[in-house]
Length: 222
Image 1 (cartoon, rainbow, N blue to C red):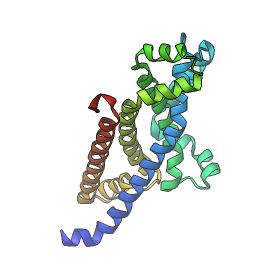
Image 2 (image 1 turned 135 degrees about the vertical axis):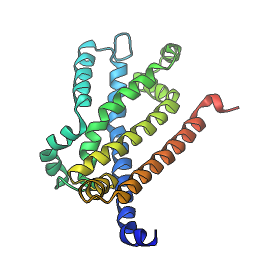
Image 3 (image 1 turned 45 degrees about the horizontal axis):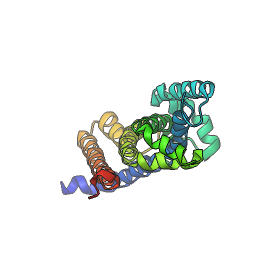
Image 4 (image 1 turned 45 degrees about the vertical axis):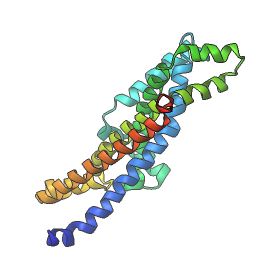
C-alpha cells in the first residue's frame, strides 16, 4: 500500500482534482446555457406565455440533434472550434468546452420537464395579477427549484462520465489514468482505484444535491 501511494498517490490526486474541475465547471456553464434554453422550450409551446409554435419546433429539433450526438464523436468534431475558443484542444480546460456543448441540450430538456411539473394554476394566478412574462418566468423557476437542483445532480454525475470519456482523447482526469495505466500498461490496481475515486465523487455529489433539493422544497418547511 505504501509503495502504491508513493508511486501513484500524487498522480491520482492531481487527476481527481482535474476530474472535479472539468465536471463542476462544465456543469455550471451547461446550466448558464441550458437554463434559458429550457425556459424558451417551455414558454414557446402552444398555449404558453410566449407561444411560438414554429420557433419551438425548430429549436426543439436543434436541441434533439445536438443531444443525440455520441459524446466521443462530439468532442472530436468540435476540436477545431475548441482550439479556436480555448487556444488548445487537449487538457482539462479544453475539455470543458465540448462537455458544456454536450450537456447544455440535456439540461434544457430537464429544465423543460421541471417547468412542466408546475401546476398551470400558478401561471393563471400570475396572469390574473397582471404579471409580465419575465415575472411569470421568475415565479416558475422559483417553484421548480427543487426539481432543477435534482437535475444538477444528474448533470454533474453525467459529466463525470463524459469527462472519463474525454480522457481517451487527451483531456486528463481519472478517465485518462484508468485508460493509460489500466488498459495500455496493464496496471489494474491504478485503474480500479481510479474507478473507486469516481464512484466516491458521484456518491458525494448525489448526497450534497439531495440535501440542497430537500432544503429548497417548500413542502419540507413546517
